[in-house]
Length: 116
Image (cartoon, rainbow, N blue to C red):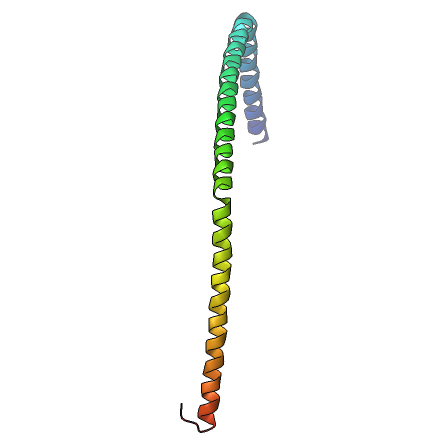
């Protein structure tokens, strides 16, 4: 069984080296032009992607500027609404506190025998 494993390893190594030799010979024969062509294609793709990136950045900046302008335009209204909301919540709490005070007074009078 040891020889079987060694044989499999040798076969795998032989196949790898044979393919590597073939690939290196093809690279030597055709590789220079193929490499130049592939390089040119990659550079074209890079230029296209850089243009798309620049355009996308411009669009993002325009959207961001528009958002800022709209936020500034409604800042006063939002602040007014925020203040009104806080005041409304404060008044609601005051009403709840007053109502609870009245409930306690009513309970105390009922416990004291006074009919309310």
